[in-house]
Length: 435
Image (tube, rainbow, N blue to C red; front, side, top):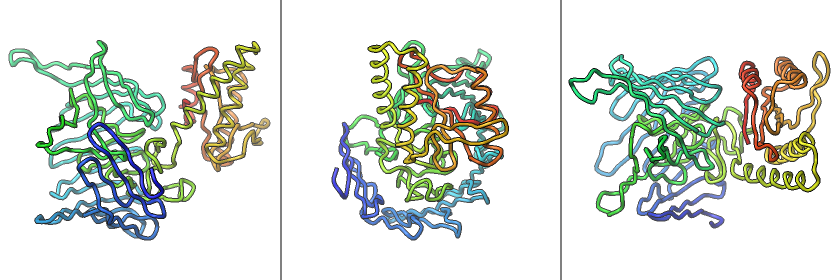
């Protein structure tokens, strides 16, 4: 790593990246593949205008409306994007004229994508900000169903069901396959295995920013796709990013991400509160993620620090025999301080007056409050009161959001809310985050 670039080594070559004085990506190459030359250009408002031989155009609201690729000896290929008044992608037209339509619910979550020309339709059911079920229809007939289980934004397991007919003499029947995921620290699944422990799927090789790398057939390298069962592919890139094969983009809840350039198609809905570079994904994909397409999360450092603090607190508890509740409170205070430091705020233990008394919030980051909990937390009179007062704070507009952050207890090994508390928090739209 140097002041003007970064380098990454892996089994099939090196990746190199160059940046300008403002930190914008201006050149990148992976192994034998030069993804873009040092011709990347940026316009006012942090908008990417050109990356290699690809040009980008935006509307007056700063949303990308076209992407044009120029190749020597070929006609230019232009893809177009259509948006609604809430900056949600409603339509995509490929260079071949294939149209895709996208629909969203009142919370801005994508509920359907379809291509009438190919007679393909996908529907989505959500659990908070994570997709819980995807259904694929072909020729107006249900083709497959995929159920997904997450821990935060990290995939744990999935069930894939599809109608199969092993032999013409046998009636078709639905077959369900369950697989479990192993993910890296950025939330990207790196392996799926079945109940027998056999690997059923692996992702292909990608660049640092998530671009799929297709190596030439005559290089002698192994097939970079790495797939054992293509149907097992959950379609995830980094945490919260769902890959769209039709456009090569990733649906990232509030925005769309382009792995080829490491940039979003629209500016950050949070404005400068989400970062100085409002179109950029994260400063370093090895140590940061953006699960919602809103703000950078230093997930790796956060986990390491939390584990170190939890380990230290566990040793203190072991050496001095502190009671469990006191030990958890000590760890909670440590995690609270870590959260405040990572969020860049000094506002801790803030009191909010609501009907019925005061509510103390552990950390306040702008318009977001963070409540830190350690170990397994159930519904007690105090917890019920905290939830009730959180609801009043949100309804009164004193804060826009209150997150409940749970850390594993080093003494009991438990983490998270009980099912009744989880249902209560979900009912009122209070995010549950695991550390």
